[in-house]
Image 1 (cartoon, helix red, strand yellow):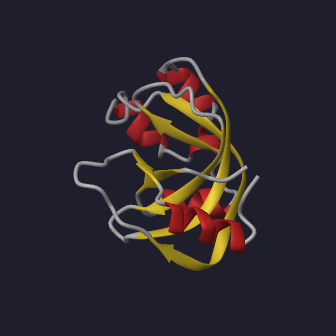
Image 2 (tube, one colour):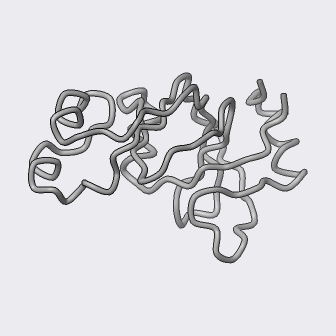
Length: 132
């Protein structure tokens, strides 16, 4: 299956996902998206890897956030203080795979979470062995 969507993630979170250290991407809303998506390093103009989205948690309490810290890697002090209260839904990730060479993409104005990848980027991901 060809990857058509890219998920924008800031540093250092994207590096933690690609290393396998972080398996939940915390967001303020749920996602219905499942399957392979490209990983876009925020502000770089580049697709740097791919990952499978396999599910999404319900809204988590602070206690649940602390219990699941090994999955999302949010600092315990930030959870306890309430700084991270808005980011309480885990997008469940697996099989993160960095690209050997990042692929440039055109970032549409206003895109904050998702980008629809153009055909050239989709083909480049297939050539790089990153299709499902």
